[in-house]
Structures are given as structure tokens and as C-alpha cells.
Amino acid sequence: MSFFRKKTQETNKAAGKPEFIIAGLGNPGKEYEYSRHNTGFLCLDVLCNKYKIKTDRLKYQALVALADIEGHNCLIMRPQTFMNNSGISIKAAADFYKIPPEKVIIIYDDISLNTGVLRIRKKGSAGGHNGIKSIIYHLNSDEFPRLKIGVGAKADPDSDLKDHVLGKFSKTELEAIKSTSERAAGAVSLIVQGKTDEAMNRYNG
Image (cartoon, rainbow, N blue to C red; front, top):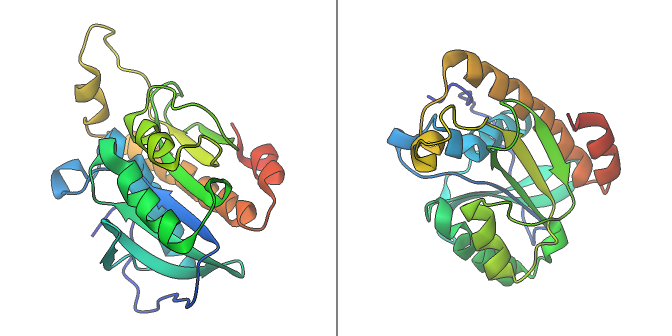
């Protein structure tokens, strides 16, 4: 059982065409569960707790669920393609449901922000993040909203970045990430209601 995920018998299910995609990025497999690069998955755990969602169907090379969030039908996604190919999964779902980039919400880790800092943006470049590079490439657009959760820079500038992002959070860091994920879940609920500016004003920082 994930530190972030609660066991629940109650599930939130929706039918019909989703209006939004909400995707948390990460790598599949137990060995990556609490790594910095899996912050998107961890945040999705918190969102799923809040709305009683189970991402237990495999579709579009992702674990998915259709769920109602604040009256909006959303496809919740955990791509299983590994981080660098996240765009393959996102594009498959976006193409199938004809969801435009501006309604594809991506949650992911950011090493340029201190651990636990949240930044919400309506669009932007990849900023060196390979998962976002893949999504921009496959959607042929960078105009999708994103929630960046800070995981901190590597302590030694000469060390391997891969080792840093695949490294595990400490218990203290995990508690900070969980708190930020709760704020991010609140931001997602505003974004699907068309209140992105309010989400930025309330939760950035």
C-alpha cells in the first residue's frame, strides 16, 4: 500500500467521453515508487484518494480510470511507457477522445524548484524534462496546463542527474511532497472548472 494511497471500497466511476485528461508522470515498478521522478504518480495517488478513484484498467499503455471531478468527466492516467515515452500514451488517449492539448493536465517533478514547491502553468517549454519533451513532441504542442512539483536540485553539480531523479525521497521529503500533492489536487479541481488563474493565484508557491 502506497504511503500516499488509501484503501477504499468506494469508487468514483463515470461513463461517456471525457472532457479532460489528468496524467501524473512516473516510471512503473516497485523499485521506482518513491523516487523523485515518480512525483506525478504520487500526486495522482492523493487526487485519487480525494475523489475515490481507482486507476486499475490498462488502456492506451497506461493505468486509467474515468471519473467525475467537480462535475467534469475526466480520464485519469498513469502512463506505463516509462518517463521518456510518456507522450506515446498521452497522445493515444487524446487522439481517441479528441481532447485538445489545453485540456490535457500534466503533473510531474521539477528539479529546478525546491522540494515541495508547486508551480502551475498554462503552457510552456519542457525545461529539460524528458517526459514533457515526449508529450510536446507527440501532441505537437506545448499549450497544455501543467503542475510542476519541486523535488530539488542534485546536491553535487558533478553527479549524474539520472541518479538524482531516480533516487528515493527521505521520509521528511515525502511528507512535504504529500502536503504539496494535496494542494495540487485542489488546483486540479479548479482547473477542470475553468478556474486556472484562480488555481495559480491560490496554490503557486
